[in-house]
Length: 89
Image 1 (tube, helix red, strand yellow):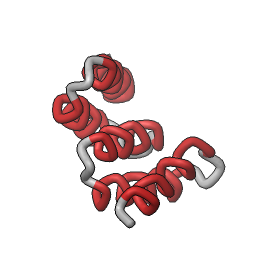
Image 2 (cartoon, rainbow, N blue to C red; image 1 turned 60 degrees about the vertical axis):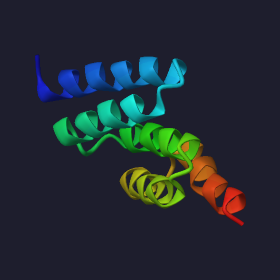
Image 3 (cartoon, rainbow, N blue to C red; image 1 turned 45 degrees about the vertical axis):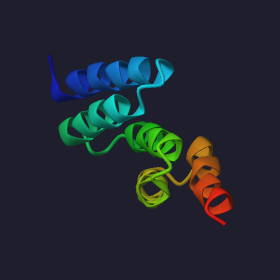
């Protein structure tokens, strides 16, 4: 298994944890996916969403910003980068 495949498997575990509303576990799996492959913006985007659920808005903005840096055309992350700004005011 390549590091990319391993990272995708970790993302899938994060997705399962997210679906089960286990936000902390989801963040952990997405973090492991990022450690395995830090070039995939979806890992940062998913972790941003989990951090929004945890009300960790600073981390969510940082992850969304990194995802945009990796892929400026990734529309989903542009939405997620704005959510913490509206919720924290």
